[in-house]
Length: 234
Image 1 (cartoon, rainbow, N blue to C red):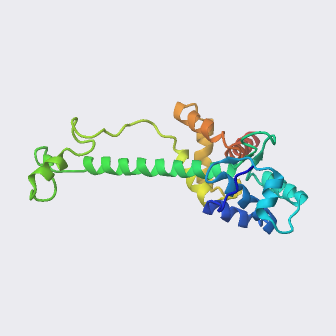
Image 2 (cartoon, rainbow, N blue to C red):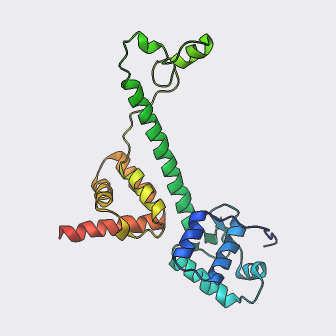
């Protein structure tokens, strides 16, 4: 590769997990080199000699190969053919981005639910509900205010009542607090929720399981839980 980066972009959760897995200084250097060539993306394709020239120092090609094997064994990367444009896939980085997106979606759903409950809990008369809780000092502002979200048909887009997989928020919260993805850290209640979804035939539950199975770390956790259920059943 002719391109030589001048900085590396690494997620805080990636750094924390490297520390938890007790990665050596050489492993950290190689992973940072991959991050430098990925530049915030989920893949890169530098050769071993390119990584060596970027790191400099006394590191050897055999040491870099050992570091890459360590990263593969700990599910940080997947390594494809050397001619591939995705020679090194940053699978843990992709997982972090995926769980972050799930958390954001869960937060947005929570906000919509709280707003709907607040509107439904308004005990004023039907006519009074058209008026805001504050005094009408600015008529144009109050007029816009009464056309609030989900209250009138001519207002903004109303909240949908589509079913949501109940394991989504539970799994995302657990994954953020446990970067090692060890199923032993799951509480009894969390296991019960996720297992119920795994056994469910509901379309939104099946969709969630399929999406989570795209990531190797998630697929491993779900498979462990399925094995746990089958063992308990026997």
